[in-house]
Length: 489
Image 1 (cartoon, rainbow, N blue to C red):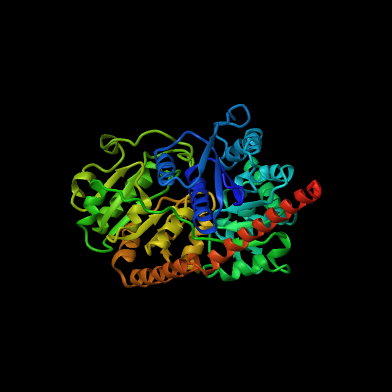
Image 2: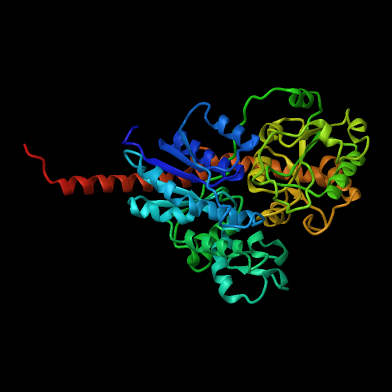
């Protein structure tokens, strides 16, 4: 290891949605800022999607990914505990292993960067005399709410979802009660207390990295940096360094053979993320809506669930076969649409699909990774939020950025009917409104490319952080040399 280089230890909590942005940050630090990087990943049962991400990140090998042992929390939380609760407890219980793994490196890393669920590990950096940063792999509006929620917890009475007026965030867009993040839906649930804790702990870091860019959310970023607005809740610098999205692999196969034969921007892609699931009734309505729209499509289908919308978050295993699809799709659907679309069981290589020139629309759960992947490929969206912060993301995408349309009622509140699905698909794929949205998302795509390019706002933000780390390294070296005293001649 080159000890003259800064060595960043990146800590990722379980789940592909957390691993992808951490991996991409690691790549950026290595290739553009001359860092050595080690990623410490607390593992959960590995899904095919996560395996694909890890394999693709290791070719070429730019850094080490140390997969820490899976933590057994079965005796600490109920089996039906919210995903936020499970992740928070996993990361808490993993702290001794994390400390040992980081301490064992010789020389030790020079900076610790944790994701949102790793904030309880920030004291490890203090013990080892390392600067410490939090990587919130989401947008500025989500960070604004997260750092403000400890204050809201003290001044708001009752449940947030029962409020009539939106929650004010100093200097930026307010949050409607129906759009609050999942942990805020029930103030008696453990996930709420974990979320409030995270919001407080972010403020003790030396800086916060965001997977967005300044021109995408200029008002909110400015409010986060203004000490009279949101800045008074977070004393640390905020670095918008995005959009960091997974790079494309050169994949082949039947899926891409089919896409190659379709006209430009004629296919709508539908996927609800690695953790999202739908009810049986909603799955049926989607099938009919797609068929009635008469548009070409690729639909990534998971078995329906009667549980929470994020019930597949920790699911692992192999994809279901086509025979299983017959059990929960309308009779004859696969036959009637065989020349129009493809139904893909469980998982598809999303970035590669969105990058394909034949894809013109994306029905998305609005996870921030997926939202960025769509924007950076110039693909308009139908926003279909399910859980976590996705309702906020959907509002941002539709009302502020103008790159998506959405159902009239939240899908988490009511089954969206086939006629409305048909209308939204047609709007994005062939209506005048859809063409305007497509033009808008292409403008933002160019803005993203500019931000990441040398001299762009995100490139400069990460350069500023890198410079701070190097200055700290130099000071520590000078301190050590001063303690040794002059060498004997």
